[in-house]
Length: 447
Image (cartoon, rainbow, N blue to C red; front, side, top):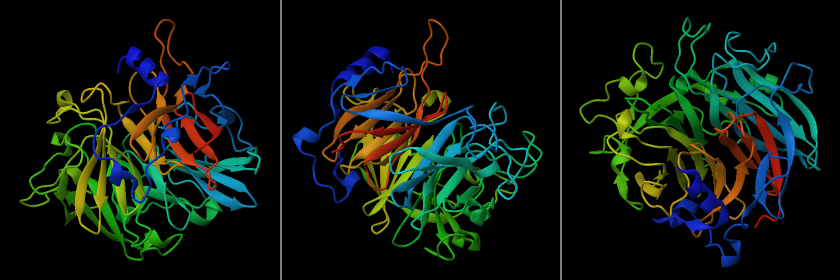
């Protein structure tokens, strides 16, 4: 996306086309006064541009000392969730998407380390009622490329490894590509145990059905064959902390007659869904997306990323689709909704700019529900990087812009946003600037 168009979007509210009503199941349309918070104001400190009336606190920066004394704050801050800790306190669990070349690894801690040769993991911040950081420590170490994840109904965090490297590759000592559960109350209680039955693939995000306990998972594969959308049927659904270790069945989504979601470009289009057992969830010989799913095949999509439960179903993001990379069609981001009661899949949102110059953003990534019942979207594209809000009525507005220039002289560059989430009282938005790794707490006159 070109910078001039981004500047235009920062100055005015624009709107999605398409069928958005079901994206926010049960939410009332936003009143006219709730359509955004006005234009963004340049931050004199050069960190985070916000609308007038909003402010931020820097909670943590990569390279600073961890308050626990365990080492330094790791790099590449990614997926995140906020949990109530009692007496107005909040605990933040934060992923670090460290690959093999990360300069600031997650420090190794006994009892919390899976593979000492892997550099990723999670850190845990505890905040006072007034927003001050009370503590910051390692919650999971020795994992790889911890991208996003999702919270559980029993208030733990599922951290996802976005890799499928085996032991002996990339210098790793153990197989990777798993989901790990992190208990924000006591990380040692969860330890560093891979949930192997949930599959070994390039995980991005998960969402748990709070009624049936089914876990939905996205696979972030940007080269052919592209990723799949999965559901995991736990042997102990809604069983509480540690229950996912009991195993279960992994299935992949098949939309009959639709081998790739990228070809759908009409918001509101619906399709029946079938679920097909995964032949080998451990991918012991063949990556799951390459396995034989029978004569009906399986449905793929490029860059399946954000995933969350809202209303009566699960929403998930395809960040982009590019024909030059082998996809059958082009788009700059889709948001899909799967209704498990009807076994129907619906396209709710198509992002610009190729579809319509009035549509905002490109490459949506992490997403979460906003206080007004709408949506917050972290952008991961080219040029300036935004957090966009979408009201229940379908109005789109800029909420934040990363002002930290990490480029070279004459070639500015801004890191993506990630991990957007809200405090339990919905008064504070927490979000990460992936690079330079910075965790912000944003407060203001939320609708």
